[in-house]
Length: 501
Picture 1: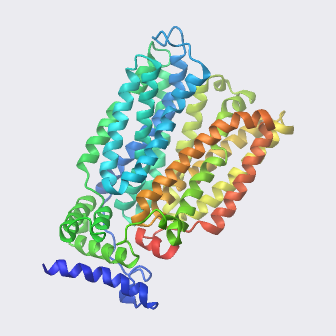
Picture 2: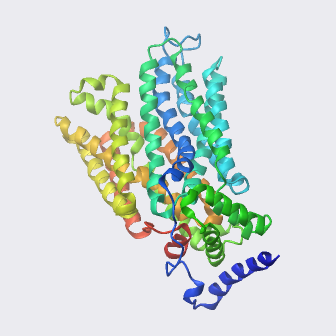
Picture 3: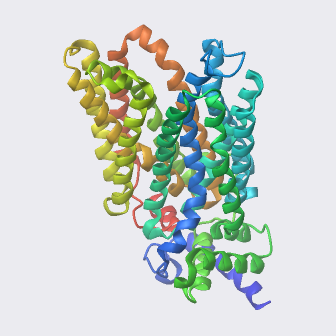
């Protein structure tokens, strides 16, 4: 009973701090940086990252495998089916079916994320991955195959929403940037694996079935792993201060979860760290559940602008379109591998993998803003070079190749990993579930828009002008990053809410 009376004091502590206008150091542990050091061991940090990150790997694998599966499924001799003669619309349904499913998954996440919690949402994502892959692999006709692709896409939407949150909320702040950026590395690793497995199976009869079926073991491992991992302590404490359970029981569960996540290195400080998080959450006003109207006011609105703005610019600066031209650019430069789209994809995938690895290594040392500003500046240069190549430098293919590689490398240093990292950090805890679902929805929606608008824009304006337009948008994104996006390096999630919003 004593501890039941102690918790209202935490809540009132926050209220005193917010209403008095002047806050003493004992009431503001965040701004003065007075909090217990987060002890952890590398071995205990691996699994809480690895199993959620498999959701990103399965997303990347779908991108790579689908590019090869469409070649296999349209082959009269190798498809192994009677309905191989597909129209462009039907092929489009296969390739974009998972994208539509991801959009629906993002909408679902908006409504169920805070109720289910990050862990159970990832378990649901693994089930959708498994069911979608099996339905697609054993599809007897096109309709069933598209349904399977759609179900798999729902898994993508849920996983890309919950994985960054779970990793951000469970990772030690010292390596949070590294781990969330490493999730982007897993997405690219999945793409390379998809391209590689696809290239091995593309000459096999019914190879497309094996390509999609190959993802099922990873979906099973992800699901079992997430069942074994503990819930996010911060999600448990959010429910506690919002009155959605017994305060003492949820606090004790959060302490146990934190001990499992940190291992023996945390010693006896787990209870103290949980109490500090509770105090900080009370101080920043997390005890009130966010309303739909509140999302567009105050610091919630600022977080939404930062998060949604980053993922919007991530897509509308032309990333899908540049990759669309990769094969023709390399072919014009005389690279023999360019005649094989799969090999070109593997080449670019390996470059993306290397550059994402560089970003992972330096993000917690250099910070988020330097990587964003430097990487996007390189994207601006490469987009104007590509535009100039298609307009009046078509005899200098080397320029196009350099611009292509520069774009891919700079994207993977900046928007690729840092966009997902920032949206997992910047939203206040009580908004994080809904805010991240909006950001993921914007991401997939913008991806679909750019993908489908590129061909008519290219026919209307020409490729050179389109790349110039993307270059201008990239300049606008630089202005957005410089004036709007804060630096979050080395801050706890609660400190980010106080200092950056």
